[in-house]
Length: 151
Image (cartoon, rainbow, N blue to C red):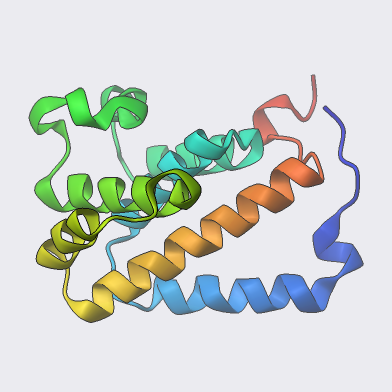
């Protein structure tokens, strides 16, 4: 795979605007590992190799085990490996990411709302929207994953 364009360099104002959302999310109070797990799951759903590589590396640096990372895609079947909060966040991320299929049903919203306060749920949903946007940039412009950069 080769990059089509370096969108961050070509349109730095747009990239900076998305970066502002990222910085806001870092200050939101949501646990970093939780957000990174959500970012990884969304990237798996969307098939963004660049983002899967990046968020896997971020989670490893944060101390998440390989065993847990291996099961992110099938978290529903991973028993107690994921906390209740992580499971709720991953379920919400899947429903919102697959909005054209799910319509984000009331039951999904009710489960997420029960797990998170209003502010945390809004911030989590911003994170989901942000990662879906970055996945589209990565896929559309063929961003090269770090793991494949020098092959």
